[in-house]
Length: 338
Image: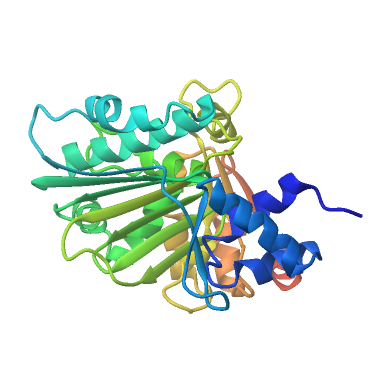
């Protein structure tokens, strides 16, 4: 059966970012079509100004050709306003995109820039925009204290790793009078890829709802936030808000999703009650919690008992769910519930 032209082109555009050097091979294998057939579409995309290629025939490296780029620098002052930067510098480059995509880009941009202006304690903000046919890349960096350091110092958490993990839960702020603690939670989940780098740690959320927290190269000071959004995204900000709101509740954001994969330090296993208590920190702020065991292969009996029996018995008004549990984890959880 002949593969639809649109399907081939979409897979090429989707694959080129992660497989710039072997993109043709990847598409050929996934769709079961000839290399020559894929190359015809690649050449067509190059002629249309959507793709570019660099190098010789066998070692050619493909990339999405930028349609618009911006590199901006601002001094942080009381008069600096994120909405004005958006209107003057960013929005004019996105007017040809669907309304929901522009809305997501605006939401994430304003939330992160506002955070840098009002909470980073820095002097400068550096903003980057790179738009291609398939993606919008937005980067925002400040030269301030660093987000994980600021959370650690403002909350008393024992280290930066715990600060980063707590940030993923939501409702975390060091300034309750001027900040809701919701912006990172929602922004990280609505973009197709979202990353925060600061203080030697990288916190990353991917489109398949995978979280990564790892040590890595980060700015010497301050915080770097990178956001990637596919231009054909069908998501909306309203749908995301509705997902984490509880029906009939006035307070709104009362449901959270906890990625247990980043509750671990490095490659350790989740075994003990003390680890469980760190996972449970602050979740009494919510009425419904989803524990996500994605990428977790084993948990200890004490860890499961502390969360699913001890905590639940002490907090019966909080609904506790779990997802992505492998068979071994499922048996351990059921054993403590019995």
